[in-house]
Amino acid sequence: MKKKYLIALIIGIVVILGILLFFVLDSRKNIEITEIKKLEFGHHPGWGPSATYEIVCEDKCYASIDKWDPKKSINRKEIVIDDDIMQELITGLNKLKVSRWNGYNRINKNIYDALSFNLFIKIQDDKDISARGYAYCPRNYNEVKEFLDKIFAKINENY
Image 1: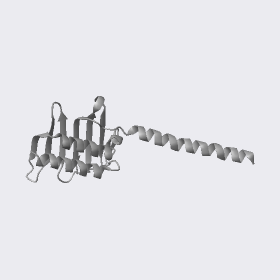
Image 2: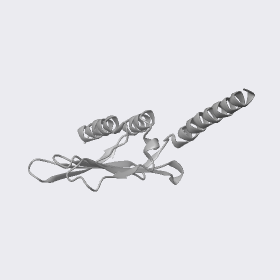
Image 3: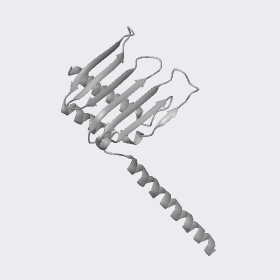
Image 4: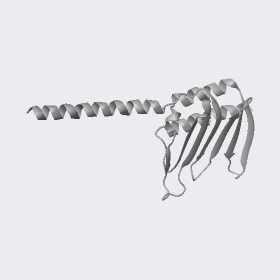
């Protein structure tokens, strides 16, 4: 009888330690973004309009927006970004925990014309966050895509 209790106790301790380890490792994946040196984000639904956004920060931050339009031409703009929009971008990316995407790399080679995306962000201390997917996306992909679409629409309005 004592052996059963001892085994149950050991199993309980192992489960609790496993859960704690999971939460500790998961929380370490989330890096707070305080500065963006470069951002590239492309989303391509495979069957319709696609967009590629890029920000490069040197003395000032500049954005370029490549959007496909129905006339099959590409619109490229170089736009200076003000500090308020950059802060809104950083705050939003942290709120959406985009740094947890780092290392995401899922590709389904058996599907054609599927949604694909790529993300690369160089942040403070020369750290970077990169992720890509084809026919697969991280859990909050739609929220992040909509947020970036909104931010780049604001940048485009200020042009």
